[in-house]
Each structure stands twice: as structure tokens, then as C-alpha cells.
Amino acid sequence: MPNSQDILAATGNKSQETEFFNPFPPGYQKGRHKYVAVLGTVMSGLGKGIFASSLAKLLKDKGLKVAPIKMEGYLNIDSGTLNPYRHGEVFVLDDGLETDMDLGTYERLLDQDLTRDNYTTSGQIFRRVLDKERKGDYLGRDVQMIPHVTGEVKYMLRELAVKQDADVVFIEVGGTVGDYENGFYIEALRELAFEEGPTSICFVALTYIIEPKALGEQKSKAAQLGLKKLMEAGVQPHIIACRAQNPVVASVMQKIAMFSNVPLKRVFSMHDRKSIYTIPEAMRETGLDREILGLLDMHERVNVVHEDHSRERWRTFVDLLVGKRRFRARIGITGKYAALRDAYASIDKALEHCGAHLSADLEVQWIDTTRMKEGQEAAEAASRLEGLDAVIVPGGFGVRGTEGKIACVQYCRENALPYLGLCLGFQMAVIEFARHVCGLSGAGSSEFDTVATDHVIDILPEQKKIEGLGGNMRLGGKDVVLKPNTLAAFLFDEREVIRQRFRHRYEVDPRYIPTLESHGMVFSGMHPEHPIMQILELPMKDHPYFIGAQFHPELTSRPLHPHPMFMGVVAAAIRHAHPEIPADQISTRWLPALSPQ
Ligand code: GLN
Image (cartoon, rainbow, N blue to C red; front, top):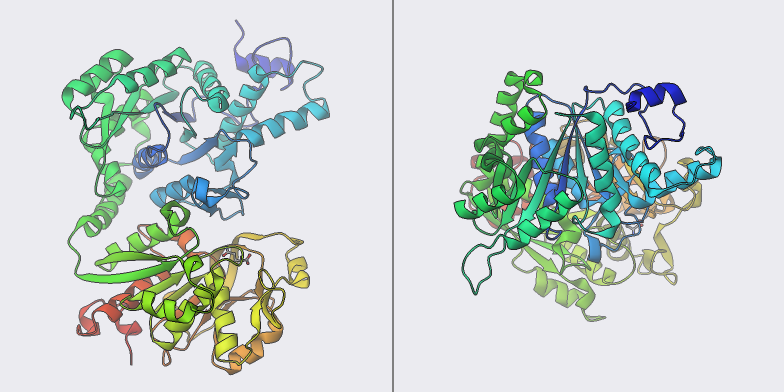
């Protein structure tokens, strides 16, 4: 039987009368790249992304180059049009791709920027296939799920391996084995394993151990059925992770091992824990990392010094995270989706990172401004914000709840309550300041208020042209130039230029900048060439911490590199909550500088 390399050579990468369509992208070296595929059984929403990224981290810590990819079953081309109510927040990558929150989990755990090559959907794959079909690339063949669609999947994976020079490509398939919409991914992975040969791919199945209250014991039947389904698809798992509320008992682990042909030492209990950040170390303790290295025959690629160093840094962070905290602070977050934390997953994480680094227990209070009575927003904001130590107004779209948010900003500004505005929260701060400080009582944004007399926030076609984006959203990583001697400059270590992630359509109308500035608003971050305002603040002599960003700092906060604007707001909240503690006894960098003069 010819192997796929021979076919590649013989056909020049074109389809023939063979099932081996889709050979290999240029530059592909068989054996150089290994694969780990993580598949879910029983049900979704179990934290497959967390498991997969923890596993990827283990390997990255060993000095290996990892390239994760999330393969979604849905037909949308990206996540830009998904409702965060249904799907969690939209996570924006540096190259501007709108993805889902799992990519955020990978970026945070791996401390690595991802690109559009690290994410795909069925929609994207079908589009690639259909585009090729229209161009006649299939040489007259009927185009089929196998080999053409599965071929496209394999090609993409190999292409990713080459582009990112990956030792290991980490594949996470969305949904659950048995779903119609991801069946072709699983088939593609089975084929990949066959084509790449032994020790090239490690299949990991995540399953779920039920513990019905009425029985009071763990049951493995659903997990067994789920795993069987995977084996029916021709995939023999090498490792099984059992999600469960409590540590999985030995007898259940043995059953899982026996029914799925997986040695017991490769069955891992992934029970609920205090923090997801403890999972990598727990995996290592059971020897899962060495098992994978063995399965992929990669022991000799490990860099032990790199591993010791990475482990040490991670352990220091985890100790801070699970250790006892010295301070407490209460942070209010406004939002239309206040009921659903997933919609604000990155903000939650950013606060988690900063709480650990500054040793503060943070209690988050959600403030649903859509519920505030019309005309009563100021009074309602005052009663809701009383007793809080800081307020964050996050990003959002549309008019609902905006008057309540503006009232919250006003309360923070007038009562020296620390404030952090994120994207829409930046725009709210501009409107509030224009109305109540500059006397422009009709100030508003053209996004939600066509009758406002002063659209201080507007869509500015001439500015959009600058970046060639037409009327579309401004997306992805962009440079921001900082003004020296400002709060922003302090937060970012006096750097002149920083890179931040954007997702917005509207911005400050430059015609209002002189008015806003002459009344005391400082624009401390700007577009490198044009009068587009990206960070605003009030001088520290007037307010302990009042800052807003047109970008989304929450997207780039990482456990080992917490975002400075979040560190700032948490530090200011601690100062607010603990005025009795002398600043210099709290921290050397963040708190003294943010203390009232
Ligand atoms: N709706 C605002 C805009 O489009 C803010 C967007 C956001 O907060 N992500 O500019």
C-alpha cells in the first residue's frame, strides 16, 4: 500500500483516485511534530479547555513548543456574532480574531499569545473546502466528507504544526463525542493517527463520573458508555481524565481502566478544586506528564532546567493564590449580563490574578444597571455603591443600562471611589464628565442616543478610514502611546508605548478633546499618530484612582503577569478598604504610590 508521502510525491498535492487526499503542507517533517487530542464524553461544559491547557502547560514547562488549537463544531465563522449569554464572552486575539473564552484559558495558562491559526470552526473548514471546489481544485472529483473535509482538518493541523514550529499540537475538539457536528473532526483525528504512525498522537478522553445525591456514591456507567462511543468511532484513548465533584474512588478508577483498555496509572481524577491553577501540579504528581512523554516518545526533548524554573515560578503564584490573604476589598461590577459570570470571564480572572499578587480577598458584587428606575439612577447608584471599595464598568453594546452606568461613574468621581472603565466604561466616563463637569448636559454617544445634542462618543468615518476598517469594529492588538507623568505611565512602568487589545466601534470625538481637557480630564494614552483617545484618567491629586481604557485590559491579564490597570484598581480598593494601614506597610510598588497624598 502506498503511504501518503508517496502519494504526495506522485500527485503533486492533487487529489487522485485514492483515499489519501490532503497530504502534507510544504515543509512538513513527519515525526518532528506530535499531537495530543482532547475529546469530551458524556457532556460538555466540564472544563475540557482547562484540562487541555493544563496538560499543554505541563509540556510547555518542559521547554517544548506547544501550539493549541480549539476546533469548534458550530458553523459560525468566528465568535463575533455569538451572544455572550449563550456562549460566554467573546475573546479577542492579538491578530483581531474573535474567539471564545477557551482561547483565553490557553493564553492565560500558557502565557502565550495565540493567533487565528489556533482556532477553527466547522464553518471555516467547510468554507475552505467549498472555496477549493469552486476553484476546481478537486480535479473533477465528487467532494465528500471523507476524504475532503477530514483531509482539510488534517491539513490545517499539520499546517499549524509547521507554522508555529510545534513540538506538540494540542487539539481540543468542542462538544461531546457522539454529536453530529463534531463527528468529522474525530474521524479526521483517527486518520491522522493512522497516517502519522505510532507514538505520534496521544488521545485523551475527558469523562464525567456522576454522584447522584440519592445514592451517595460515584457511578461510572455514563462514563463507560461515553468512552465506548469514542472507541466505536475507532479511537482508543491513551489517557482518561475523570471529572467529578469529589476525588474519584479507586474502584471507579479501576472500572474505567478495565472497560476502556487504559492502564490505571493513566486514569486521572479531575475533581473540583479550590483553583484550576493547581491542576498542572496535580497532574504532574500522578506522573501524567511522564506518561505523555513516553506515549509520544519525547523524553529526550525535555529541558530540565527550564522545567525547574517554570515550576518554581508557577508554584510561587499558586501559593499566593491558595494562601491566606491579608486584606479584603469589595468590588462592584456593572453589567447587562450581570447574572452570567461567563460573560465576564476575563474580568473575573484578571481580578483573581491581582487578588493573589496583592494578597486580597476580593468580593465581587454585580450591579444590574438595567434594573435601575428611569430618572432614579443617581439615587439607586448611591445606595448600590455605598460600602464598595472600587467599581468596574465593563464593555458592552447598546443603550440598556447606560444611564445607570453613567450614574455609577458620577458617584465614583464625586466620592473618591476607585474606578476602572473598560471600553464602554471608558466611554461612560467621558459622557459623565462632559455632562456634569463640562456642562454639556446633552452629552451622549451616537451608538444609543440619536437625540443627544453633543455626541462626545461617535463613529468617525474619517478615523476609521485611517485603519482601513470601514464601518467595522476596530479589533485586536494596537499600540498605545503613553503620556509621561500620568497614572497610566506609572502603571505601565514609565513605558512609552504599550500594546493592548481592542474591540469597539465608537470613540471620543476629537472636537471635544480641548473642552474635556480644559476641565481636568487627562488623556494619558493615545493612538500613535492620530487624535484617537485610548486611556483617560483624573489627576491623582483630584482622585485616588480614576482611569478608563478604550481597550480591554482584562484580555491580556495573565497569572504571572497581572494587568497593571487591574493591579491598580485592586491596590486602590485595598487602600479604600484599609485606610488605617500605613501605605508603606502594604506593598512596595503599587499601594504607596496610589495612596492619597
Ligand atoms: N459599544 C461600544 C463601541 O462599540 C463599546 C464596545 C465595548 O465595550 N466592547 O465602541
